[in-house]
Amino acid sequence: MTDSYLNLANGTLKPVFKKLGLPQPAILRRYRPGSPLTVGPVLVVSDDASAADADAVAKVLTGWDVDVRRSPETADGERFGAVVLVLTGAETPAAVSAPVLTVAGTLRRLAGNGRVVTVSRAVADGDAPVLAATRGGVEGLVRSLGKELRGGSTANGIQLTGDAAVDSASAVATLRFFLSAKSAYVDGQLLPVGPSDAAGPVDWEAPLAGQVAVVTGAARGIGAAIARTMARDGAKVVVIDVPPAGESLATVANEIGGVALQLDITADDAADKILAATKPLGGLDILVHNAGITRDKLLANMTADKWDPVIAVNLTAQLQINERLLAAGVEGLRIVSLASTTGLAGNRGQTNYGYTKAGVIANAAAGAPVLAATGGTTNAVAPGWIETEMTAKVPALTRTVARRMPSLGQGGLPVDIAEAISFLASGPAAGINGQTLRVCGQHMVGK
Ligand code: NAD
Picture 1 (cartoon, helix red, strand yellow):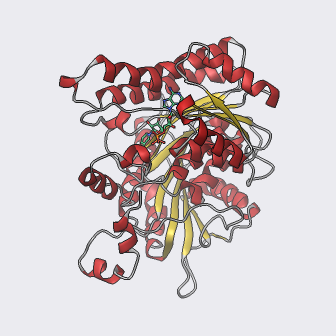
Picture 2 (cartoon, rainbow, N blue to C red; picture 1 turned 60 degrees about the vertical axis):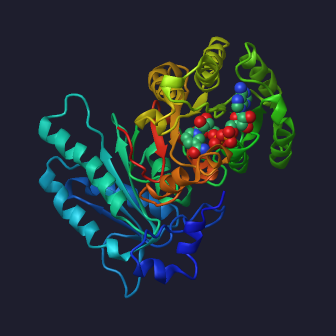
């Protein structure tokens, strides 16, 4: 479904839109293999106490052939592709002032589709109140800046937890994700990143090389995009969908050199079928619970035929599959489940769907230690408004409003969700566990 407003605002009518003060969503830069990480040089700024960490970040960036700057001066007309603000050592709000104001002075020289990424420490149990305030404040800074940036630029933050170092594998992989075009529709988000002993991928263009991934609901929409992205990233992919979607499923599988498995995930033996399909490929490494349905009704009009199937497909099926796979001794499994901003904020007419998506978020959080004990992780991704056949069914006026609400002023594409999921499933993201990453263009509804 094309967004004609977005096309008009970026076409010959662009000056008219500007003159009338109408919202001007930008064409977002999306990842292409081999394309530069950022659209220009990357400035690394820090407070004094974070200088050593800023040096470590600069060294990582230099290793990626990025043009790293440590001073905010630019040549005439030059624009930064990104600014990384390192605040890991800051212990008082006063310490944050100078580096933040340095960043402020660069924002008019941030290129379109630019990035601002903060690297700070998460508030931890036992932090002194002043330290907690210093660290907690970063969240409000990032979320507010996300709402100010224009031209497809985004602001996101890495919150290091435990003793995770700024240049640990998971922190580095998260920095790369936030800087890259893979995070085009991620805005105003803070992602807690813990320590992990994962080694960085040998090849950033194939971070899933050698992995076997299963994607449910992959015949179309977001699931098909996840399957394509994971195959692009080097995984062998088993795509699952219900038998009536068999033809489209086979098309996706053929396109990516994957395996099609016609399966209703609510079937009792779904986990056994998944194990049987992945065994010849070398076992199961990644499981993406993407299949989902809607049966919208106000709760006052809700009936069992609208409530029960949504719970069965969106929630119970994945709980049962996870339980059986773990009981079967699968180790090191990387699970990513599709939540929704509806699971965070609620949505009129979607009590059934909202129940399941909030359930997915809670399940990922509670499942984290269980998966960690086997060397795995479980996370959720909460899409906002994504242009798919599911959202094409929504009435036109609601659709128009939903597209203009996020800071990025447009809906996302299935590939935006797929990029986030492929990142969370990748080896070096091992330090991210139990989290829900919103991919919503900063449609900050809900908590
Ligand atoms: P979609 O309807 O286009 O695709 C869902 C796929 O799941 C279909 O191919 C369907 O056949 C399959 N499926 C349904 N029941 C199944 C079952 N029992 N067993 C196996 N496969 C089954 O949906 P989409 O928009 O691509 O959404 C994918 C996921 O993302 C869903 O979990 C959805 O809730 C979530 N999501 C979507 C949006 C959005 O804006 N599109 C927003 C938030 C969350």
